[in-house]
Length: 81
Image (cartoon, rainbow, N blue to C red; front, side):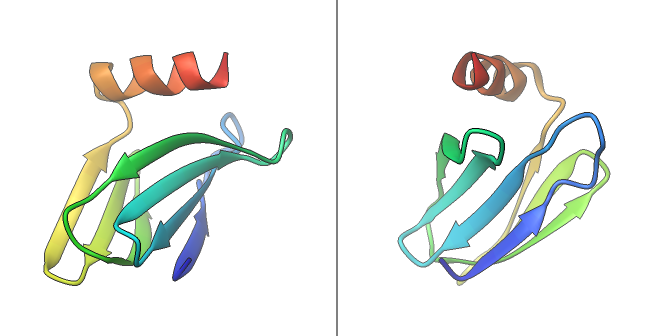
């Protein structure tokens, strides 16, 4: 793991972690479990929350994921049960 960042919302308690193994993981702290693994194309070096978007600094560029996107929310809800 290279970095971690809390999701700044009182409604959703999520921790995002970035890693040089080319993954970003979302964790649900209450269960201490990983709820979603997001594969990325390069080593993930940094994270920042911008409203409901997760910006991921990669070794070759930046990836921004919209947490309100229908597909993403469907996967996250399924992972959280």
